[in-house]
Length: 176
Image 1 (tube, rainbow, N blue to C red):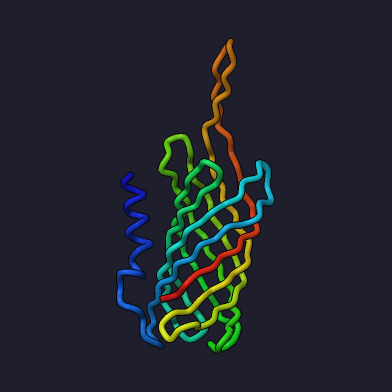
Image 2 (tube, one colour; image 1 turned 90 degrees about the vertical axis):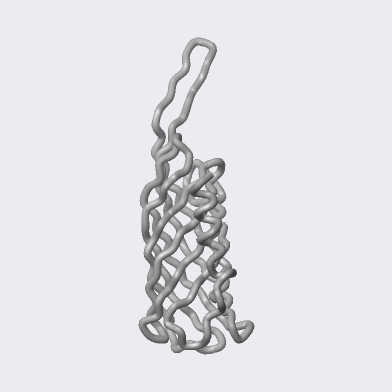
């Protein structure tokens, strides 16, 4: 329960804080995503991501964030570092490259997180004077180990299963 409260508060920071003015070096980003699974067992992922980014200039941003990921019944919480590079100077529509990498943790005792990687290419546009909307298409890799049980009338067996979820991801977000 404590990790859920922590994640909720972290994801609410952009909504509770004052909006960023133009040319400020720090911004907040919240994205929602899903994907098309490319691995077996096939699981459609859902993710809610919060990130804080620091702009070194108009093209290069570096940051850190947290993701609430749901794979079938497994909940994983990746903590990551990310980098974004705008391919052109910011304009009405600005294409960018983005890559996040980190390690995930699981609130459940039966699941252990693992390596997390999410490169993407996207486009951002300013709809209002304060907010920027993002749309990204990418790839997501999430490794995890989970404890599985097999029960019959004769015996009960448990084993550790190592999984590597691969998916094409689609993310939509807002930058504050």
